[in-house]
Amino acid sequence: MVEIKNTLNNDVYTISVIGEVDASSSIHLDESLSEATSKYKKIMVNCEQLEYISSAGLGVFMSYINDLEEKGIKLVIYGLSKKVHHVFQILGLDQLLKITEDEEGARGIIDGI
Amino acid sequence: MEYRFKVSCSKNKLGEIREFLQQVLGENSIPEVTINTLVLAVDEVCANLIIHSHHCNPNEHIELKVSMNGNSEIIFDIIDNGVGFNICDYKEPSLSDIVRQKRKGGIGLMLVKRIMDEIELIKGEKKNVYRLHKKI
Image (cartoon, rainbow over all chains, first blue to last red; front, side):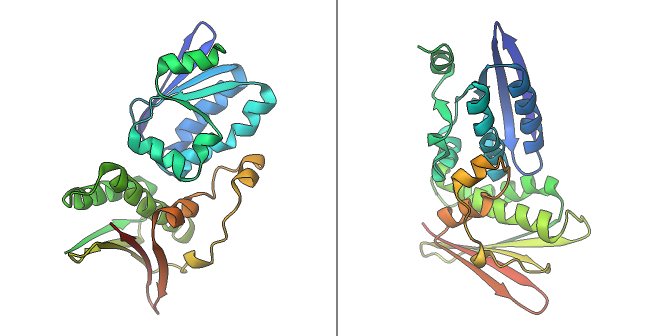
């Protein structure tokens, strides 16, 4: 089960992913990222309450990497727990996506500091 | 020690599978990050079977067996009676191809191979056993 909350603060769109993203729930993350990348150039993904992610969720993030580059969108993931971060590291996805520790770090990257 | 769990082939059951595994592995003083990766690998195999071999038919079932024999190896058996996907023949796609093609799938078994020490398919007349070995 996953719950996704979307907030817009000035021009920064934040997607908060709460719970577990697996083969049954990754569609919700996909819908949210699809909407965000079609409308906004600055996107933060808050994973402070993401308890689990499987390949279905990783695959969703991967499928947007090209779009981000093509459309000049900045997307930063933050707040990963140690165990969830490790899942991103197994295949080296932490090198393909922008991942930072906390919201402050994410804002720094989004604002180009 | 042996632990067993049987579920119907519905994607909604993946959460129950993970809960079962977490409970079993949690009793054995294994670090949280390791538990999560083991749960992930089994989840990936189950998701593959439920979706591709059983087409999410809730009238069909898969069974899990976790064996810990006091030594330092854990064996996870995922048992079904589907067509028998040969997990050992799986050829890894490259990550850059997946990114370029904007594919959302295809990395589950890659994770399983990275996490587990050994993967076997034991194909019987009526059932298949997908056996994952991990040394702790």
